[in-house]
Length: 126
Image (cartoon, rainbow, N blue to C red):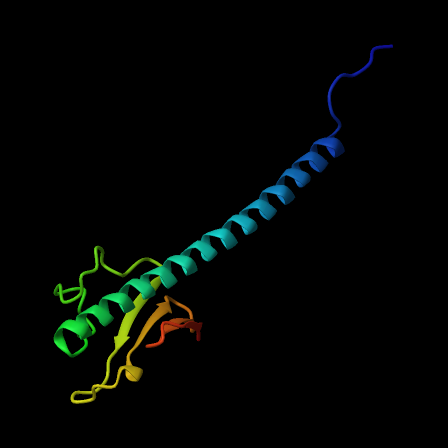
């Protein structure tokens, strides 16, 4: 009597099922890490824009326009747009010198939430 060498169909299917489950879990964990990194980058970009707005205000007595990074009003080394977030500066109305009204927002693209930074430098999620 010869002994068959190899795996049964059930053993192969169980192995494939375990591999699929492990791959799914790792992809989910990896995508969460990617999102966390994107959130961190958005917060860093908000802080950079905020610092540049404060510098601009201290030299010129007014805030830069919403497109300050496009026409070199703000000294930002890169365009603050990426594939996950878009940024918007809400500046005070003309003649209003109050710094409390400055707000910079990072909108999560295709979502209804994001981050904002106020004049005190506090970053909050909205």
